[in-house]
Length: 119
Image (cartoon, rainbow, N blue to C red; front, top):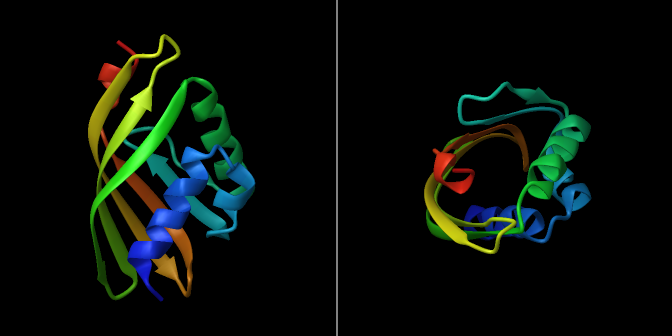
């Protein structure tokens, strides 16, 4: 599997606010954690949580800089453009870490400080 392409497809689903498509990349019992927030467990809960988060924004765009795979882990280095409700775009460096089970994600960790988006 080409995980550079797969990561692009996953993040494009988020950019297009397609939480149903996003959920298809996750195991049913997946864990998702954004920064130091509480973990969400289960693809349905994660899909809803991502959808709720995106409702707070005017838009989002993930710019992939690098993708690395080592065994059952994939790491993506990004710059994410968050469009606020007032139209201002705030760009934030982000690292996503995926732990895989087969071709699906069983753990999705996002490391970013998005304080500037909401300040």
